[in-house]
Image 1 (cartoon, one colour):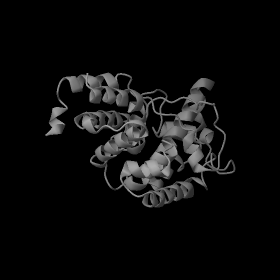
Image 2 (cartoon, rainbow, N blue to C red):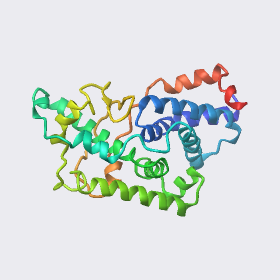
Image 3 (cartoon, rainbow, N blue to C red):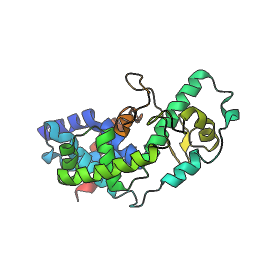
Length: 268
């Protein structure tokens, strides 16, 4: 194996879950995220002679992923704030739906609801604002690294991020208990509505019905420190969300496709 191939394998092993997380937050779909991750690494393999080292590697991969995403998503968001309100907050609490849930089931579904709602809020942003918010709030990149990822100046990135953060803050501030415990929207009181509307379901195969066709959200667990306390800073709220659960066999599927020579189609 050549030097470039060894560096590529390192790029795959160390960064594929982060690329999947990025793609999932941008598309709200595990299937799309897997396909975007696959194409990102095929394109990276085509240009493996340009693979950077060290801290430059992840921004380089994310930039490829963002290019792939740009070719897949519409400039107009598929989800908007009014639709999200209509789905989760348009009717009274549905206690009948949750009465049969065990405590572990309820805790799992409450986390699913928080995860699904927060991801849907981000998907109400335009793609340019969404990518700035995802890179900063969910992937934790600093302004310089995020700007380098997008190929723009740091000042331009800061403008995008400021606009995105304001829109998310303006939406969540008067509604969400995680921003202010005094707000009217509490996950436990919305759980029955979310289940009855099909926004979440009782199993990992549950679908979120904000998009057509609906796409699965996958499984989630508590944060590393188990902290789910209300926070007023929306950036910190998003920092508490765990990474999505990607297909374990995705790296091997990518390697198999590379070995088959299919990546050469992208080199033409």
